[in-house]
Image (cartoon, rainbow, N blue to C red; front, side, top):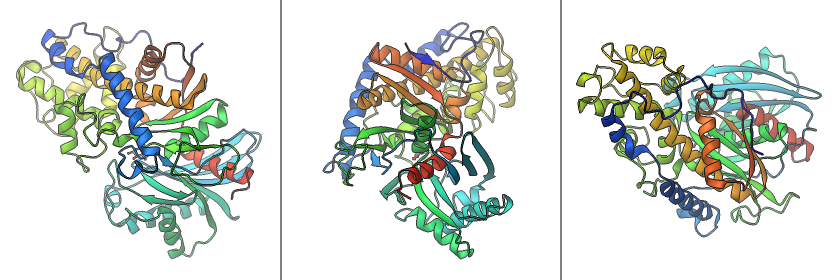
Amino acid sequence: MTTMCRSQVCNPTMWPSGSTEGVSPAVVEGGKELVLSDQQLAKYMELFEENINRGLGKETNPTAIVKCFPTYVQHLPDGTEKGKYLALDLGGSNIRVLLVELGTAMNINSKVFTIPLSIMQGQGTLLFDFIADCLIGFVKSNNVEEELPLGFTFSFPLVQKGLKIGILERWTKDFSCPGVIGNDVVTMLQDALERRGHKKICIAAVLNDTTGTLMAAAFKHPRARIGLIVGTGTNGCYWESQQKAELFDEPDSGSGKVIINLEWGAFGDDGALDFIRRSYDEDVDLHSVNPGKQKHEKMISGMYMGELVRLMAEKFTKAGLMFEGRGSVSLFTRGALESSAVSDIERERYGEFTNVKRVCDSLGLTHATREDYCNMRYLCSLISRRAAQMVAAGLSVLMRRVGHKKVAVGIDGTVYKFHPHFHNLMMEKIKDITGDEFDYSLFLVEDGSGIGAALLAAVLARTQQL
Ligand code: BGC
């Protein structure tokens, strides 16, 4: 039996995802190129599998696109973890600092700090000074006197040389601080702490947010073997056998397994996904801070979803198919449509147009007709369905690699959390692809990337690797 366990499932009184009711035939026709066929998804899966094998192989890794970084994490939580830990979570436009106490229950105290764009794109040392200030401020205000182990979640592609060494391979999302690529981010944080005369924090491990999510998922669910993020960015990690992870040549620490951070956002950077990429994808890529990079991520994640819908609406309007051919300054402005608006539009009660009208009004499209509202909702569903189906196809590949009949997938990220249909679309597509092969569940792991960092420190304490 396949279980659905998620806090926010689709409300049956909403417009069904992909409904063409009220949509103009020309928009349905124009949007067809965004609908993925079974054959296209099968090809996508085959290519993804090939990319993973290349990433894992010692000989093939240097030129591989999906890097499959071994994380050095070989033990999952078993629920017996105890003690007090700190966690630092950097990944989007916020830094979250947590104090986690594990015992009979889990107590969490945390604070979120917003990172100004000037820091996200300024000198690397300034970023680490900023992180150190947030951490020290938090520790002081919580009267933490003792030296606590800290798990550091750094959600960008890191080449790990150990649990405490992570060399930044490249920036993604909106970050572009000079002076960090090629350096160990743990040393950079330690140096910033030392510049402030602070020696009481011991960094126990550096990890990716997908690893954190898998750790947090496994703490709750004994069958969790895959961690996934569909938020500002997207990525996955899974539990691979140590033998297949050829770059990981550590002695077997008992489990014979290691978590692999896929960095699947880069899938397609060599053109492999061109058979399903469209002019809108090209456009988003060309105008991003990292053209040519993270092409898979740009088709899926929250940072780009709104813009993809806007570009489609812009094209259809200019072709006279929407809004009577009359757009607005906002509709023709890059970045004017947030991905949260896509979720809002799709969260509409069946037969109603309240949310879509609000979004259109905010874009200055007050002349929109009922057909325009239906068209807008349809464009949103085209982009989100394509994203959910790609993620589902990727997950199906990972489930086969994990090879357990019963498997749970822990997922975090704003798209998964807030999009009303994403979970169900993924569940359905995985079922289509894998039939009865698996008994799977996908579940939301809230704040998994932060809590998971503390849990990793706790697992290292339990397995005496601190
Ligand atoms: C990063 C990954 C991260 C993902 C989700 C991507 O842009 O490269 O390391 O896991 O975003 O935050």
